[in-house]
Image 1: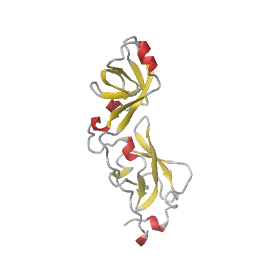
Image 2 (image 1 turned 90 degrees about the horizontal axis):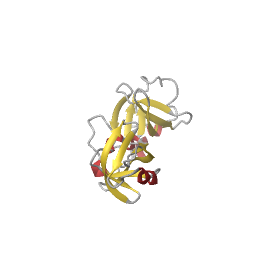
Image 3 (image 1 turned 90 degrees about the vertical axis):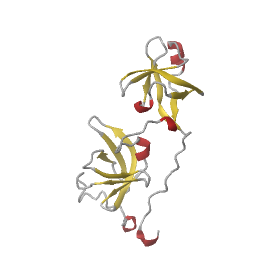
Image 4 (image 1 turned 45 degrees about the horizontal axis):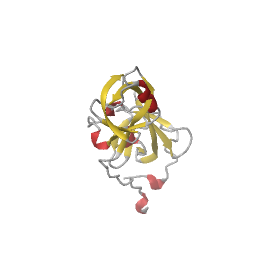
Amino acid sequence: MSGGRERPPAVAVREPDAQLEAGRVGRAHGLDGSFYVTGAQARLLVVGTLVSVAGATAAIVRRAGTDERPIVRLQGVDDRASAEELRGLSLTVLRRQEPTLAPGEWWSRELESCEVWDRGRRIGTVARVLELPSCEALEVRLISGGDPLLVPMVKDAVLRVDTARGTIEIDGEFLGLAGTGAGAGADADTERG
């Protein structure tokens, strides 16, 4: 690249009809067709939301349990046997149905693949977002290799998130990266101005 600077990736266009994974049908709960949802995106599982499963679309008519272990029942799934037939299948919702998040909140998929920068040097890419007991954390695949870096999603560690540009600025000093070489794998041509 000219000028020794690297540009952030182009912004992907949001498709309102794109399907978002809301979780997978888990084991049946009770006799009325309710089931647990595994790998749940709890904010997408709200009564009234239209969910696609097994090529059909149905409304969520019951939501119970916790955000970590939600229990839902879909319209037309009226008994335990029907719920068991769906076990393991993906539940999806249209992107246009996702709730609006508060400022400073992002969906995991918006953060995954973002480039991570520290003091003007690109140090890696977000591989995934982890839900830890005390907070969420970014698992960063370092360009220098080695074990991934875990960055807690707290304001002292994450200085700026720009999902439109696909970049996240962290405070490596706060994370104890000063002198550890975490950014050492960043060549001079990855500096940005």
